[in-house]
Length: 314
Image (tube, rainbow, N blue to C red; front, top):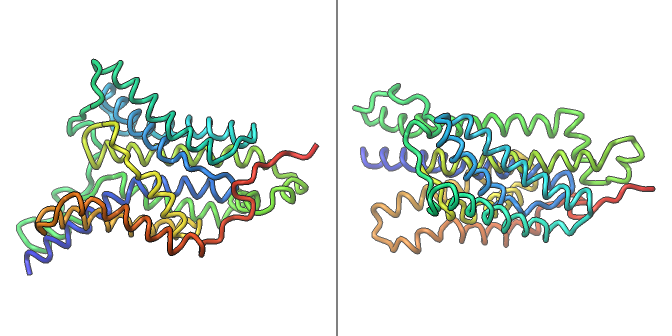
């Protein structure tokens, strides 16, 4: 029984840890997709956020400044994507692919220049996002260890649940959210009502980049303690899959991210004691991603104007 509760606690802890960056990115993807702009450049924006957050924390010693700057880095690449797709009418899929190549390429080049041609940037414990509620529970008992595993989590994990609640409120309880959703469904009608469709979509893509950058910063400042070129491997695409699974709704994306976080947690638990080849175990999140896309991509109702460049009427 003790082993069961320990394993369950570790499983839940790992699920929340791995879910956090995916949910930040998924919430960002919701902003972009619902407003009518396809953003598959989430991966590149997360990579930029991971690098910038790590570097800023390394030089300032402040994880929170690094975390925020990681979001700003993602917002910068979101702005590039918005200029190309919203203002200039470029193909949104191609522009997103370019971001996915441009973001990692730039940050890896800068990393090699700044850190003596090495592409690994380490962080010590004081530079990482702090964990909350450590030492609150009595780890001498089985129940205390379980509670410590589940609730003594990183502050970024608690913040992402708050962010999900705020995004849901913005989407469905504010005028901005109503206009955002309308721009993704019928931008021409929005224009006749005096809504600035171009400005709305531009802002949403930048917000998408900011949240994706926060997700990338979580990876290097909470899950690991260093930035490497492979720090963000497929997580941007998993976040997009979570949005599709959740039918382009913030609360649906939350459930999708919990599913993928659970798969990563399962990878952690099985990798330590099952005797199964680690390469096979590492495939679990990606196999589940493919299955989710096959099962749910046709069932999700995509916003009517999603992926269609909008040119303001003369």
